[in-house]
Image 1 (cartoon, rainbow, N blue to C red):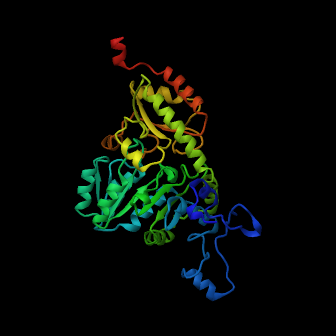
Image 2 (tube, rainbow, N blue to C red):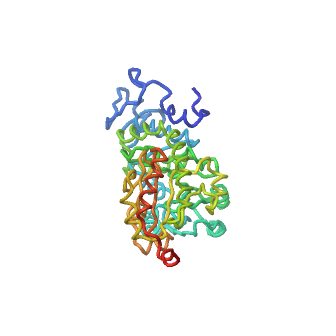
Image 3 (cartoon, rainbow, N blue to C red):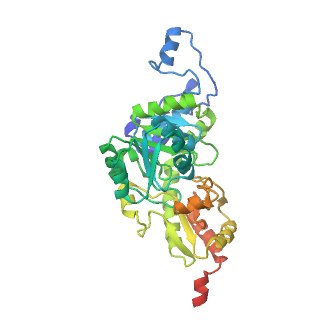
Length: 403
């Protein structure tokens, strides 16, 4: 079976599983063994030094984990892949493996809160020069990259305001100065976007989110050029942020329905975004599928679907948000995203809880913003749920004055 050329729905199921497992099992076993025994010392040494395929110690590699890594490698069209215990493990290990004193990283104002903390608080402490640019100002980003850049870090769509950056354009600018391009593809998933095909060198995901899809396992993955992935892998095997077999199994199992889930979530999110955009109590909807979204044209060019993440604000402000969210019936008010169940909450308690209100304001994230991750529930039920919750939200003060 040529899995490399299979469609994504087929690859989600079969990648890493084209050969039967032990005793003819058709699903990957959960291999919890810490170590692996060899009777032949020459064979053992060949595996230990990477000259032969096999496993030595599960902090380094594991048969169950390898299945997951092969799925993401095939789906993203990468040369190699490795994994981590969490999404932040993927991000931090990648940055620390590829950067060091005197190196310069250029990134965006709009990145996940944990990533922002790395840029604002941790990397400068290791004498890494960090420059954060206005996210959608491509000219500014290109100008900063041209000054000298070792790594360009992008996130698109961004968390939580769903801004879009042109991967192909910015990757070309980075490569002109020899920089490595890393893209966080968590929101889009490999179903909706493949940054490697647009010029990125490395792509990472918080596998906890859409890849797993069920909010029951944590992990992170990185894939891309083999030489770069191996550099990060060598750092990770000593750093120790390894993914264990049981969460790897759950994430790989979740990935088998990835295309089905994403296609439904794409369609539901589009309907919900249009509904909210037309509602008189909603001030702004951030969703790249809307024609009014500033990044809509770029999203159409580099994405095959717009995803299921959106954010929106209410005209009546944060006090209205505190009434609205608890009134929702088919939503978990919880951190995380990408689950089969709909999740919602303000960035102050979800994506950017690590930051102060001043830092959130600096990044252009209003306190009253609602991040909404559309699940696989019936979309009519979700819209009816939003309708009944919005009904209890007071009219904004200016509307009452003109009534």
